[in-house]
Length: 224
Image (cartoon, rainbow, N blue to C red):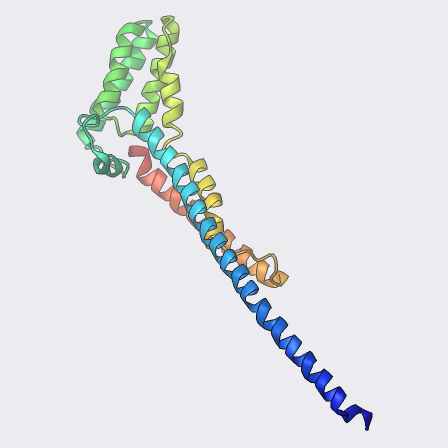
């Protein structure tokens, strides 16, 4: 009978009021945490994409500043510079002229005529500046002739930095790692089987990107 006494009922009512008051005061605090978490997430996406963009900008900078200069490259505006990063098909007759100059320069270098050979190697760079393999071969030949003449081998630095341009796969690997947090959610709290599925899908995506990159590189990029 004592369990239904007025005193007990009043105590129970007070307990419920205290519980309701406590829950109502905690609700805004939880919402605040969710809002902070959302802001952190947006900041993370912004910085991840920004860092990846900077990495790709380094590739473009190396390409634009250290590749052989084609006619009109100096006067290009921003959009023209971006467009010039796309694959470019060198006319066959231009390629033949550059190949002939490279072979002629190599023959002169073999004969010890390094000074004349330098002119032919330079002709390769000015004739077909978007032919990557051909121009890199001309750079290497110029390095050898400059070394034989005791000259400063400026082509070595330019050759190496151009090789770190848009064809260098390291830029894209780093950009992928930097951008990944913006698109792949944290699965550390998910079941292990879900993590395994995410990993398999991501591995498949990486392999697909590698195949596409190499296809573009070998069928377009080497003449770029």
